[in-house]
Image (cartoon, rainbow, N blue to C red; front, side, top):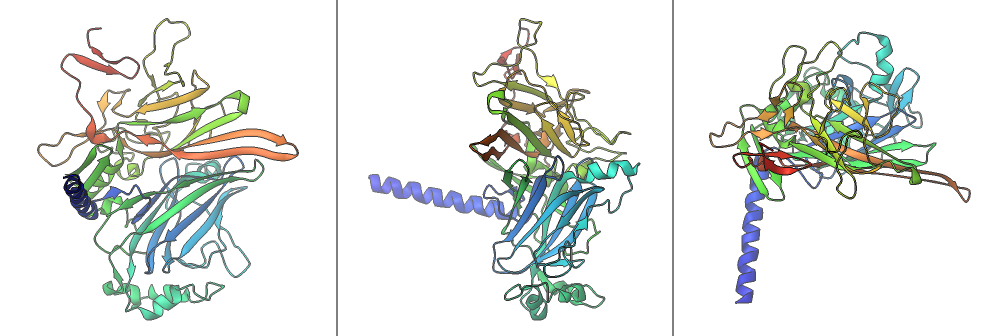
Length: 485
């Protein structure tokens, strides 16, 4: 009996796993294994003495065409864009570092790019490529240095180089090469009548990409690393274009179906557009994580947030769901969520002059966590940059919760509706982020003893929101309570 029960249970698990895998393969989703067709880096920084080391890895036995976009953090204006061609099992890495007039990217990697020689000219001679506004002129040149030093990065797989393209594959291959020799075949393929003008030269994306980013501070002796967020089943078709073309982007998501998952299960929903389906997988009613600013260990915490699809939803003339605010004259579009924080003993925020637990504070004007496409949140006062904000907390350690369910400023709810007639709207905003922690001990016994680390911020699932019982309300400090209290 026991064995039969186990076999039945295992077969059920296998069947569920097969159904789940089939569901994922047909609809855009976040891959918890950090491997996919799209990679999202919520933050890069070349500010405050830091540099960012990027890695992108092709884990499959096939050559791939990728689009790499590096975007500044205020409104996701492109500061460097290029195609990257990775051979089977290829690994590309590059460093973004600060300069007097902004930032630049350099690499000692020989993987092929288009345009060619991005970050490198020849063996042993790194020629850094500057980060600059590609299709946008800021109001003042004074804005350029700070704006290009912080932002976010997206990488889209455009397709797999077909096995019939032997000359092109040989050029992309890095085997036995200690230079970028052969990459001229990529440039030739983009010439009129070249291989890339033949639709059969590529097949649909197959995934298998993963990547990392590391914030390196040489003087402090710290290295903070995190894995890129990976998106699977972005598209079932080839989208191979020259840099400067809007595609591929999340607007091209196909089909317009999203698979959302949590510890409680998964849900597949259809949407009116591919962009809405892409936004759905990042939707979070709440985002939370730890922080520490304890003086005893000289601790510092920063959060880095990114809204991956916001640049497609928001402009100076419109804002589409789930966003509610257009970009204003200060280049901001503040969604004004609320936040609350608790110490290690579950004590919430208390106003100094009042004898009751305070309601969550509004982020608008207090911190800019919702005003720009990327945000850097300091948990201790620091000089403000274009995407940097200060957040004041009453406790030296604990966890903080950002509530995205509505815009507190105008009381508009952040919702995204599926086309399914019986589906409840998703609540929240599409956001991803990491929390970084630094501990500065200075020199101990003649050795530098500083430490640092990073963790992904935790998002509450958007599709498991339960309506309060009739006559009840919810408060993060009090929990569920009668509304007339």
